[in-house]
Image (cartoon, rainbow, N blue to C red; front, side, top):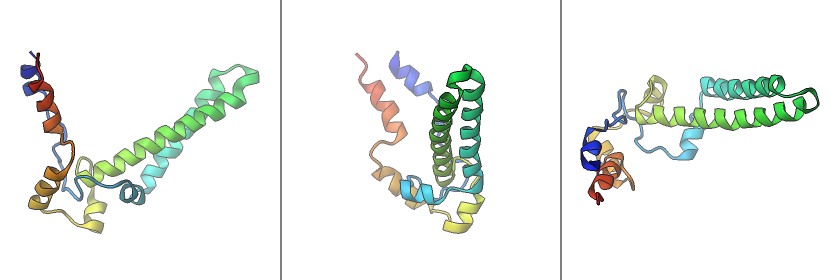
Length: 132
């Protein structure tokens, strides 16, 4: 049953935009954060603060709003970093990255994908091969 399920699973990581880097490093991803990404971080933090303020009783409003602002900061940072990495991988619109870094050739993408430790397709197939 697991083999047939794995064969029907969609591969959602096929790039729809030009690939700049199929496996960007963290420092490159953080250096690529845009104004929109920083806006996302601010929006998550603000939403956390507001939710914390209105969801708590009066003596706990300050502490809860600050705590949830911190949680929102972490969530926004994670979301912005993921968005930046996906632009490098060609999974989101990446016109500015293509202009700044250029497009990676198909041969280079294939070579670097083979060097990756855990490509998606190998993970899907390996689960199907261990069917008991």
